[in-house]
Length: 413
Image (tube, rainbow, N blue to C red; front, top):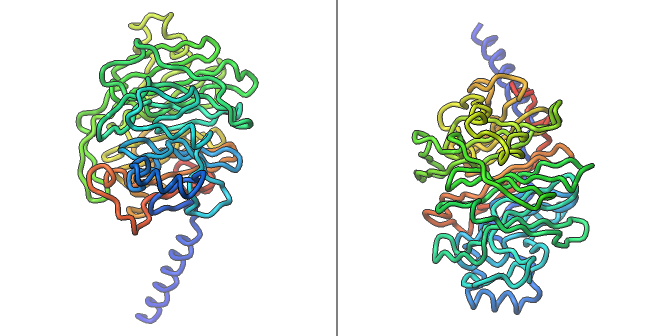
C-alpha cells in the first residue's frame, strides 16, 4: 500500500510539473545592466561622459510602446546625465542593444541647465508615450530636467506628435496655465481616436501630482482640465515595499485605459490613482464636453467599479479590445493582474497572472500592441531612486506575451 501511494504521489507531482511547464510565461525580449545609446561617433560618447552629459548609471528606462519593428523606450531625466529621453530598439535586434534616439540624437541632446529647447522637435524628459491607430507617436514631454538633483524646467509641459512613417514632428502643443497647478506632474498620455477620423483625436493626460486630468483636442488645438475626488490618492494605500525598500508615495490619478467605442460612439475610460487599490470609470463623452456641462450634475457620472484588494497598487493599465480584459501592473506584488470587463470588479475577479520578485521587480509600464501582444517593462525604480543599482546585474527588462496566452486558465479568460 505505501508503495502504491508513493507511485500515485509521483504521478500527481509529475502532472503538476507538466501543467506548470505548459503555462505560457512572458518572453524576455530585451535586458540591460546599464543602457547605452547609438552615438554619432565613439569620440562623441567619450566627450559626453567626460562632460557629464552622459552618466550611464543615471539612465533608467521607464515607458514603452511598440510599432511595427520598433519598441519605443523612454528614459526620463530623473537625474543629471540622461543623454536621450525618447528612444527605440529594433524588435529583432540583440537583447542588450543600445537605444536609438528618436527622432534623432540631436533632438534629445538637451543640456540639463538649458533655458530653452534648441528646436520645436527637441525632447526634454519623457515618461510615457502612446502609439495611435493613425500611426502617430504621442509624446508627453514634462520639459523638466534633473528632477531629483537641481530641477530645471527647460520648457513647459507639452504634447509632441510624430508621424511614425516619416519620423517628422506633426504638431506640438504646450499646456495652458489653466491646465496646471502648483504640484502638477504629467507623466502619462492615452489617445482616443478612430483610424477613420485621425484629425478628431483627443488626448487624456493624468496629473498625478495635483489630481486632475487634462483633455486635449487635436481638431480644436485646445485643452481643458477635469477635476474630481476620484483622481486623488488613497491615504491608506500610499505604502509600498519593493525590492526590500519601503517607501511612501502620494501619487494620484496615473493609469488610464480606454475601452472600444460603445453604442453611442464614446469609450469608457478606466482609471485609478497610483496610490490606490480602487478602479473607477467615466465616459469619454463627459471628458470631451466637460467645459459645457454642469459640473455638479456630472460629478455622479464618475463611477466606482470596485476594489482589487490589499497591496494591489498599480502604475499602469491597458485595455485589450480583443479579450475585453484590462491588464495592469502590480507593484507591491511583483507582477501583472487582469480583470475581464464583462465581470463584476472584486478581488476574486482580479487575479495575479504572473509574479516574480527578480524578473518583475517594479513593472513600470505595459501596453498591448495592434497584434494582441502584451508588452511589459520592469526597471527596479525604487532602488534607483533611494539606493543604487548594481551595474553587474540585469536591472532593466522588457517582456512580451500574447494576451490570450496571458489569461489562459484564469478568471479573466
